[in-house]
Length: 110
Image 1 (cartoon, rainbow, N blue to C red):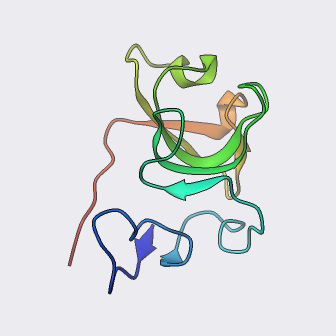
Image 2: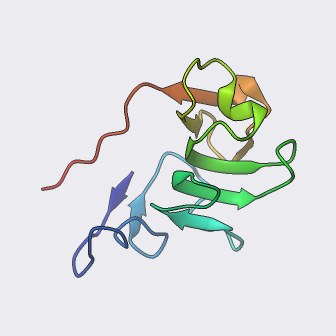
């Protein structure tokens, strides 16, 4: 993902308004977003969420989860995990074939 961070601070650069590009074709045009921020909710971070559905209906693009929902623990032995949609659009986090689990989330500044 690329952002235009001019005029931002350590938290608000990560937002839909500052998004320049992403691997997901539906993110920039999404009219509904529950979260697009670093602090997220439910102790989640770097959260880009479309909807919450009591764990089974949770849909989004990216999240650093905390292990609260079963999907946050799938294919991970840690309490937190970096999850991303590995298709070109948002996904239900319980559709495991459409979800990637990353080892690292890195932020580069130039």
